[in-house]
Amino acid sequence: MKKQHVAIITGGGSGLGQAVALKLAESNVQLSIVDISEEGGNDTVRLVKEKGASAIFIKADVSKAEDVKNYVDKTLDTYGVITMFYNNAGISGPGTKFAENTIEQIDQVIGINLQGALYGLRYVVEAMLKNGGGSIVNTSSTAGLVGQQTVGTYSATKHAMIGITKTIVAEYASEGIRVNAIAPGATETQMVKEYMEKNPNAADIAVNPVPQKRLGTPEEVAELVAFLLGDKAPYINGAVVPIDGGFTSI
Ligand code: NAD
Image (cartoon, rainbow, N blue to C red; front, side, top):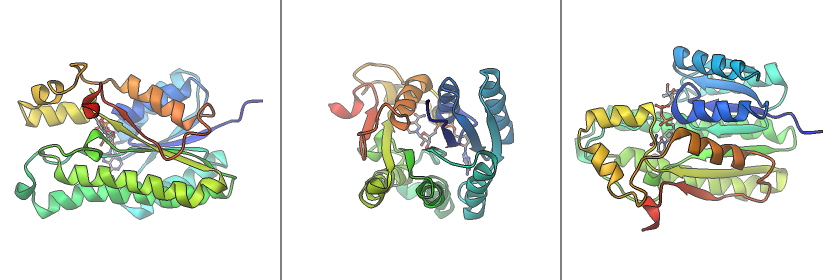
């Protein structure tokens, strides 16, 4: 019999998180959709249910540790276990050169992208250990692999996602926890559309250096995440997988 999986997806109300929810729904994974946006989160829950899978929405600001503990506790109360975690909520920041950032802008990006992701891992790993393990995908970025202009704080948080991925492998692989990171290039989601509206030249800047000369799609990223989270990747651990049309390979 196939194992019944339970997944938490942060930032599940839009973009990559929503695409992953819809992909996992095809395998009947039971889902906790976590987002600060009630509208987006509820929208994803509705779309998942239309596919015949189970989902609940849990409102949370991932930069608040108490909200993070609450989404873990509520998932355990509802489904009993957590076997998958897509640690994904994030924002891109103001899109200005680093010395033009306000301290508040730096703190906000760190609070959501880094502290939020670390808090999630803190509580989810603890819960997974009680049930013999689980699999995790952390969301880095091509900006977590190479330097890019106007995303300084973002880039720092996305490099950090690779560090914590490797640490968790070192500490918990022997206890059944598997964790990988993905490094998407510019992908057509709300976050990127908003960034491009703020920065009129960004579309050209994003596409020109990509050998495949296009942006990625959320569905392409969802295929990768579902594979890494799932039972068909049992020996992939601590990998950082670019999905970027070749951007970081040249
Ligand atoms: P998106 O804006 O479409 O979705 C992000 C979701 O996170 C939204 O639903 C938003 O409401 C939610 N969110 C924002 N702040 C939150 C908070 N404090 N607490 C809880 N939820 C919050 O963005 P996306 O493009 O799908 O990005 C998802 C992740 O992928 C991010 O970590 C981003 O850095 C990463 N990423 C995206 C791209 C890309 O090009 N789209 C590339 C590389 C990495």
